[in-house]
Image 1 (tube, helix red, strand yellow):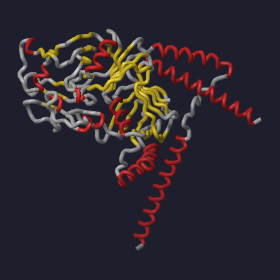
Image 2: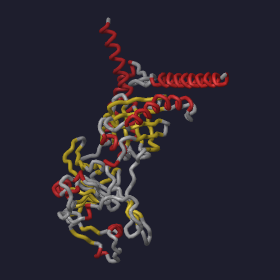
Image 3: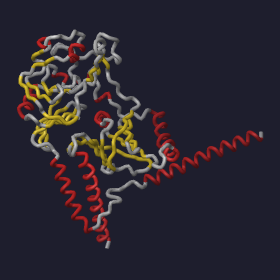
Image 4: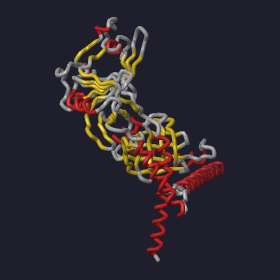
Length: 218
Length: 216
């Protein structure tokens, strides 16, 4: 009897998986037909992928996920805003005019080959450039359906005791109250927090996700 | 004394009220969260529809795989400064490259033009293949060095800078060689993609004209 019940449940799960697959493939095909990059966020599968024409360019598995508010945000979405507390700034060079707006080290690329005194490890010196390491590890992504995704990394500093308190306040006090009394009339608040394993994962997501990128949340 | 008591009671009631509201808000949030859609939730399939859905899924998968570029194609990760030559889902060759620095150059006098040294992102294709390319230095190259912009084309031509080969992918952008091999792996270019000699040779020989290039 128990085996019979288990078989019935498994068949139900298979059908559910099939239905999910059909829905996600339908959604993805509409995006993959074009030449633009898009992302697929598989919440239950715990991975975020950057894709083009159906092929996976980058895949970032996430360590943990938590969410708040109404979960009816699955489907096709578009990124409308990317915000970070410490958003990277471009270096502006104005030769012959006022000084560069951001002061950095001289450009090693300007040295003749073989004559520069660069260290052996090219990763170890600063360049007058905007690189992956300059990207924030913690930021938020706002989507057109009202969903907000907070991206953070496991290894990233929590900001000490103050940061922990702020985080507890935000998640357990601010979000519940905003969910009820905030300006999300009728829709409620939807916030998803994804924690990635490595610093570079968060930074790479910031680098590759641009405002206007479309995607699917499944 | 009486007023003080009233104030204490009012403060206590406010605090309790706040806690009650917070608790209610938290409870509502938890209830919403518990409604997280599980796999396939809300999309019930009848047993009789299963073969139809399976066929549909197979067709969609076939269509999706048909979207992959045919033959060899190039994928460039501008964040990691990596170039991959791929065929289908297989990586045929990978190389450490240098992509755009993201620096903004502003012309202080003259037309007050502005350049952003990003490697363009998107889908491109190999539009030209050149052996022993010459670099025709654009205006920004002189402005960046604080030099005056020459009038004659011959004063703009520089040999050797781009290495032995170049693959053009439009709007003046190339995948080319470099003299600064120690900077491979870093974002240092003005938008082009610099590749080491050996990798460049293999890419140039292997990737045909018209091959797709995906830069992200």
